[in-house]
Image (cartoon, rainbow, N blue to C red; front, side, top):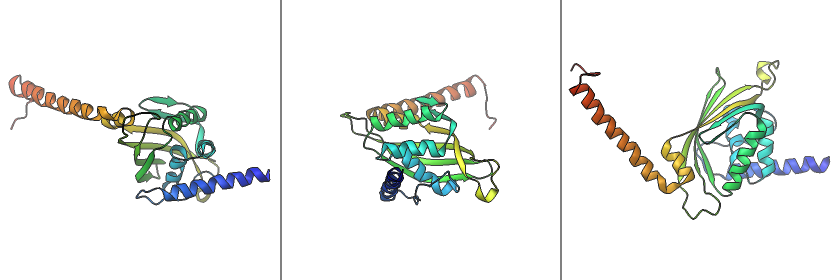
Amino acid sequence: MTSRVEGAHRRLSQLQSFSLSLSHPHRIHPLPTSTMQKPENEIVAVVLALTASPDPDVQKRAVEQYYAPDVKFRHPLCSANDRTGLLAIYQWYRIMSPAHSVTVSSVTFDQQKLELFLDVSQTFHLRWSPLPPAPARLVVHLRLRPADPRAPADKTTYLIAEHEDFYHQEDLAALLVPPLVPLVRAALSTATLACRVLSFGFSRVLGYWRVRD
């Protein structure tokens, strides 16, 4: 038992050192030793444990300790309805990209709705891919719930009940096949041009949705 406790403390210390060594503009607090009590201060360390820890045991602990058993996870490429599925997704994520960087630019916490919004960028490099990686930006939306609804307000801790990742099209391309980013941007610009032409034709020529002045 003593050796297991010492091992857990050693892995926690490694994660804290790793987190503090990362370069990002938001101050990183140590990984909470239990469920989150101040999510706006503690969530960055939890995210780094999930996505960027060099230790798979720390990643597993982050999922089991800070996510609800029935957590709902949504991503443009996959989804999960429990902790087991979420852990499998992020384990495969780390297997696919053993060396990458994660930066949290900002954290916004809506205390009344128990929602967190994180502005995140990552450089994801597929294992054995000859293509150079490109940074991809995403917005992470987390919905929290009290770990114990009966706990007094000043002792309430929180679990992550829902996790959603939102990407723009070019950022999703940067995540998977970086050379496609210029093509995706060109397609988006072409769609905008088509909107300009069609809106002009239908409003000015055919009279649909015409502006009076």
